[in-house]
Length: 551
Image (cartoon, rainbow, N blue to C red):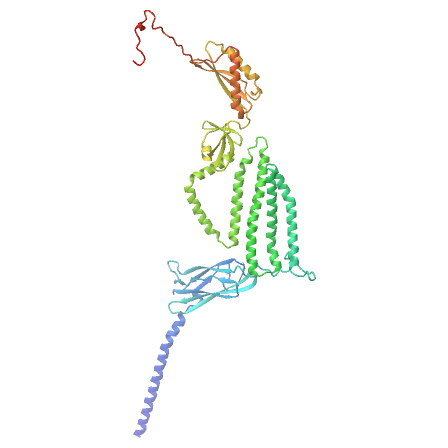
């Protein structure tokens, strides 16, 4: 009986130990699962962040068209709504060729409510297409944005999809063996090759160029012949003809190369060269035509009576034409080779500022020249007086003005800022008539009225004097001053041409001298009366013996 009880107690003790072991195992399993459950509860979820692109989609493909050698940029925002700090990585996945996405370095996204705004990231993502790319309808680009919680290393990602269509200017598939790159060549052999549409297209373009030359060049030549020599006109016609032909050939290069279907690499380089030559020749040809039209227009306007517009304004037209054409041409060529103009413009602005500060005198001359050409205080061939000196205007340029001396025996070059600052007296702006003053002195005791009559008679009979008294003042004689030797009179007459002022003045003075002499009126002159005393005469205190010379 006791053995039975002992056996029962042993069984109960075994069952209790088994229960204890099971309970311990359950407790240990629970302790292991709690951290895992806690970790799953704190992992990054889609509610913890937001990825957005203004004007674009984040949950469906974005269809984008990009040309070869061009790019498209997108602004991406990543915002954190959790309290954890996250690492943000950007991974490009491109399913195709000729398209590349910009690399974006890993960034740190701070927790929500960061006082420095670190809970919002703004990045720029750029898709670029190769310069030598052909056209493609669909190139899929995936940008995978992966966010990692730095607390527990849990991750979550968001994928942006771009469906890129490449539109290449080098696409030759639709132009091969086609007339003008449009009309298919359906001719029988041996004309079914690409050479036939190539030659036909070339001949047609040259024919159009010939028509343009036939219509344009004679008219431009007529404009040039108005103000240029025959040799200059002939040379201008030849240059314009060559320019039109070269432009036609360069325009033909693009469709011609596509018609032949040459390799993409050859097409790329030849097209660049042809476009560069086309830009240069086109700029030069337009410049030549612009100058011919400007010169002709200014020449015709200058022939209008009282017109303030003539060929002296040509430097201003030339300057603005050069600025527009040469800067535009240079910018086009740089753009062809993918050179960014923004940096060049900024550098040019800095250099211009330095030049402006260091060349104030030159700039002053330039703007003074602009002022003289626009206000037109004088024109070529006019007589002007500057600072008491008389000059004949030769050339008015942007930086300086050239004058002839009155005798036209020398050329005076004067900076325009000095000319603009001086008081300008125009002696022949509206006509070449000039009021001439001739002075003559008669002795005291001579009848002044008689002298005046002789002088006026001379003025009436002189062929150099203007006798149109409705427009000009009559000749006059005025008493100017009383000199020690006589009375000073002045004859005032209007002569026909200021250019001959010195010759006319000399002739009138000679004639006046003769006329007055014939009437008994001679010009006074200083006289010295010398009295010789006789030292030998009696009673003269000089009777004493005079010392010999040298004693």
